Image (cartoon, rainbow, N blue to C red; front, side, top):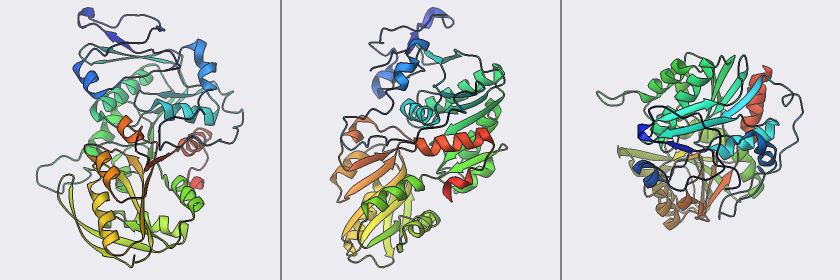
Length: 394
């Protein structure tokens, strides 16, 4: 790790967090069983002395196979870098994405200290003044979902109590979105519950990316800007210029998303009729549309266990499709997903960096990652400058 590790573990008998400054000595061992089992290592903002150095390293590439290097972004104007009341902070869920966004916008990532007691409780402190500031807090609620969600709530509470002027929570991946209605007796609507928690914790507005269901915007009692990763994905597949391309929706719920994608690429649309028999279990029924001899592109918002994806690939090839590609905004890739993708007849899976890929997925050459840092950066600029966000998709 090039930057200094500011993660600290607080002993169980400490009673409260100690007022220690950033240490340059990396933590050798996580203190909790959960951390050691999951490989989760929280990261916080760099100390003041290393801010300039880290800022110059954000465009660096990764040696991991299948991970695309962030493209060179247009140089941003200095108007936001000179605005002392414009600040961006990040949680530990996807710090590299937050750093890319800050580089794109031209502001340093806000300085914080994130510590954990030995039982896993979060202690969070802002290391700079935010009174009256327009603050953007970047934190996807990805694995471990509950831990990152609680961390996000605590960070927002700290911002509110520090008298931040406005707090915009930037959630590239909105966890618990798949439970958005009562489809069975006596179940929770968790997407509404999370929206209420975020509002209560102090969010003044929300910036979300590719919600599982668009109506989740209505669960919030604060303004919501809903971004789509489609401009980044469409641009990539335009450059590939795949022959005889057909966009495929893996289920009826994704038809609107797939139709928009197909219209942008000016190609036909096909639909897979899917019946879900249980959580994370689906059965592909049949393909609606002609895919014989075509190159198919499966479009989805979330790839979790990849069961639906692999069955859709098989169904398309059985119907005579030539090659099958896939793309998705959120690479959750839990359980057997990586093994299924590696063993499948899929040519390539293209995802975005709303969620950081875990190490097993980084080793799969079939998986390619595109950055949405520019998209988020432009949206953040628009919100701060009070200009239209919808122009990003026109």
